[in-house]
Length: 171
Image 1 (tube, helix red, strand yellow):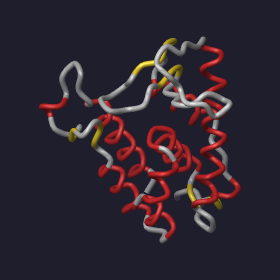
Image 2 (cartoon, rainbow, N blue to C red):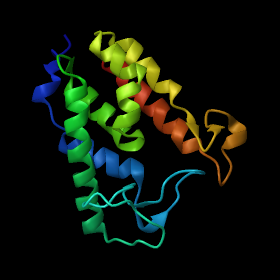
Image 3 (cartoon, rainbow, N blue to C red):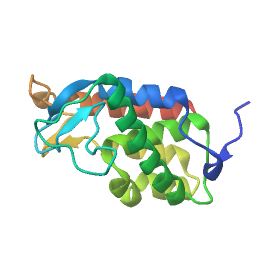
């Protein structure tokens, strides 16, 4: 028997969810542009500092500061995410999975996403399937093997496939 879903308003990103985000993002002590046409990121994929200023090329961090930046980013995005799903219910693991997506793509994209619309309608399988629509980076389709070279974006697609598999396992 599957566990009941919980009102999104009562959920927060779990410690396991936060660790999953930082593991997926990887760490860099200096600002990089992770994929073509992307914003500079530092630490665990942070595009902004705790004070809200954008990361710039040349910025550096330490592992401890990077965790603080990541937590500040999560806290800000989590409040927006939770509000965007008023009235919806999720499993804790679903909440963590979609917050991982939000950390990567942002609440702006989330607010317009079909995932959000499907979750609000209670169509959890369609929301899982909608994850696979986010397969582009730098103008390239990351699901296509020709875009998997050393400067490619295979990781974007691999991460979506992993999210989709985890999401479907909860249904």
